[in-house]
Length: 372
Image 1 (cartoon, one colour):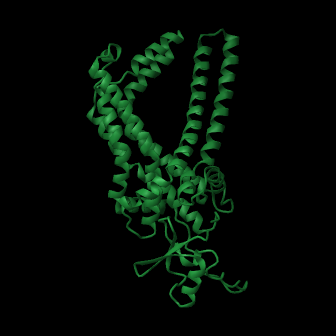
Image 2 (tube, one colour):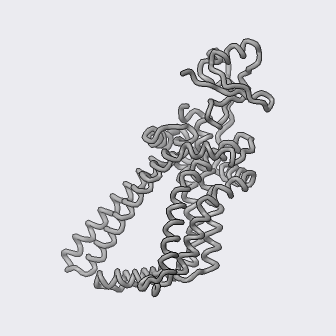
Image 3 (cartoon, helix red, strand yellow):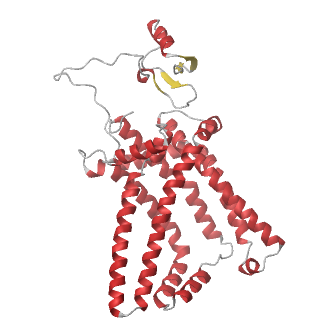
């Protein structure tokens, strides 16, 4: 079946119409290359000139005749500035998306703080209900994450194009991407979890080396260092390959494996550019800036816990005793307003990370670093 399109002229939508009908409209002067268009069932608008087979490609220009100059891609400073500007323009849209995942998380934290260690060892009806409610809120938050991820991509693309989308009108579009985004998120974050487990294995080997004989300790330390180097290499390779999977899965409507492949291609593109202009380094910088911001928010509340953990690891000689001490250190504390407020601030500002990646992706598409 031929693909159907909608055309928007002076704020009014016409369609759906197939390409043959659009050619008739073009012949009558009713469709211009600059008119907005979108496929039926998709809420992302492009120009009519981008509809395959509707308008003839522009004539090849002479080598002596310069073509129209494309605007240069944003600098990193401009990406950060435009991310803040777009976040400000769409604050309530992003807040709505954030609440989809934050409300369940907040409810889980509040109910979890009500379960004290004593009640966890000797559960009563209230503790059991609180535990079940916490678990249910955790599952609800996980189910809302794919909607949040897809929503960030769609809303940012709309705002970057100068439109003011209504999130309620786009919920159907976000839900359409739920299976794909959920599957990819499970794969991506699952691999990162496995790599983190490898780090715990390295830590366990280092602890064992501290209690072993000198010759064995040297071998264990060398093994741990080799595994640590291998883990860092795996982590960095995989991180680069999945930098832009969310944009390709949603904005480019690619299937799961295609999203991962094109994400890798984009991350490794732009080799003719200076290193700080390449998509990979832009993505790494944006992610690093966000990690530094999160670290700055959490370093105060977590500093005392980190010191206790470091003390346990460096002073314990018995692995079982070390695990028991770590378990005691990590027991859930009572509700802390400062920690809760900082966590809420981090949650509200989280869309900024996605906005920055969408802008880098849109710049790369505009400068033909990736195909359509």
